[in-house]
Image (tube, rainbow, N blue to C red):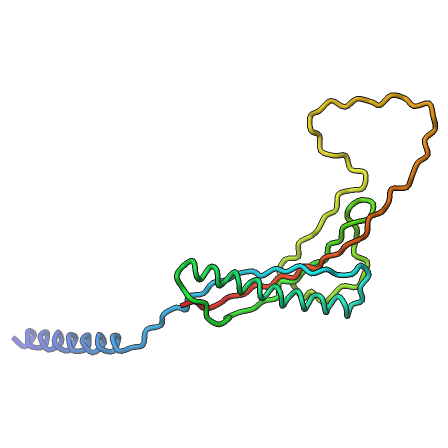
Length: 178
């Protein structure tokens, strides 16, 4: 009998303790994870060939600002597609940038100016120019040799086209959505 009374008392104490824990757990604040949308903003701005570091940095900063605007527009679009509204920015990260130039004899040319501080980007795309005199892709057509010409032709220098450079900036953004 004594054992039964002790067992009943222990069971009652356990039930009371469990009830208290259940009440405490129900009263505890719940943490709802913040919903976010993450995007990458990208912007291209013209940059003069041979720019100074100060000029290149000024263009890079303008491009970063434009990239933030691009990212915000993308985030607003995505939030709207899932029926949410865009909240404040949670994170902003500089993803670096690069400069590519076109023109010259080969169609691509190297930038000759000073570099802006692109930061420590997670990945910098490499712009690869085709080799000068590289063979064109074969279309499968038959190639015929031209007939021999007996006259001497004057060779004319190919006119070089003007060089045009573009600076690209990238930023990663994360916004709260509700």
